[in-house]
Image (cartoon, rainbow, N blue to C red; front, side):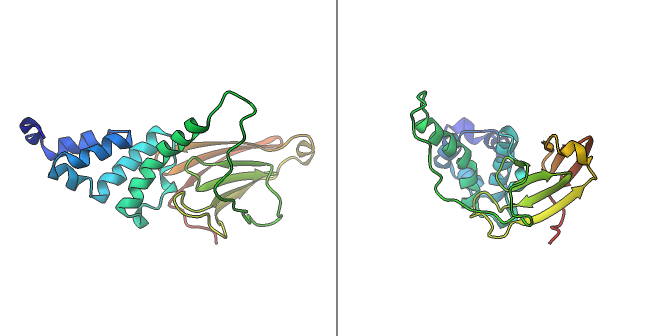
Length: 209
């Protein structure tokens, strides 16, 4: 490293590192100097990088169980969106004859009774939380962190309901809108028949079961 760069305070390097977006830029710093290499071995650095990545890519940060993640898992999580984008680019085609990509695995979820898919569902960016609504009944499910296999039994985190207009439901399905608010909150709006209700889900809430 240039002698001038060695004089840069550690906290300045930290601010530079957590503002990098491309994994190749971040990992290239591992071979620069010992102090930066040591910084990139700290879990707190990778948590900050993942948080920034989630913000810029509109991924719900609580999708990851940070307390359970090692530095290596955090590194993989930071690389995953770029690897996925690279996979799409490598297999994209303007031709409609191009075969569809097959998933590497499939999981069938048991989301309670009745055993049919709900009229309206939204998979929160990050892949862990599923919001679904049917006939004025709203539920938030935990499918498991994105860097682990889907839970065999999804966890019901919260539910809310209203009494919709029966006749209206014969004419139309629920309409669902989900928005991320800050780092740990989902704001959900449901139009059910002639009734509209809005609820907030905080990721630190305890599961219902």
